[in-house]
Image (cartoon, rainbow, N blue to C red; front, side, top):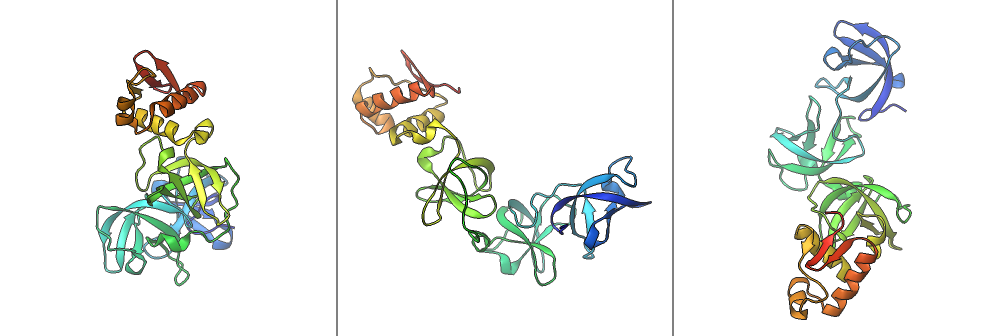
Length: 278
């Protein structure tokens, strides 16, 4: 079914001076303006477009890529505050309205916000909401262990980072399993570590052996990342120096670097330890 607010591939059925008309089936013929029509486009050609409502609330097509479709979340910049709410840049000529009633806090121009894009049941207009919680966890999570998922970083907790999973659920990435900088609104791939009995989703960013490392090994990897891939620590280093840098005993350090070495995460040299990836 072809829907407003979604990307679809439609057939050209008519050429006019100001563009081409596309067959949108139950939505009728939809105009693709000339300025966004591919060169040498002819009747019978198929064109991938995004459908939305123009300033006159008429359905129109564009080959420009929207930063989010209906049903998705995105981190968008507010470009203007108007009479009915804030307007967000979502990559199209007509900005996306974030109504005052759908703002979880006062929106400021030139700042970016995590929002959900949806179609209003009242007037069918595409709008945004920054009250993201009410659009999440509406379905039972059915993810397999190790399944790759799309993530959007949505905040921090004492445990680590909250992330939106596949535009449908909240999940958490534990801070001792994060080996790269993360920022609010960032999109990235991740993997399901575990779906708990209460429906909570534990996530990881690296699939494979790193997940099974103990807390000391994850600390060493994190410190290595922070230090640019090298730490001047070996099994000959004084215990107090190891504790000062890593907050762990020398015994725990030696055991963990042995495990990391076996898993080819690090190399052990006479002057210290290094990340293999550096």
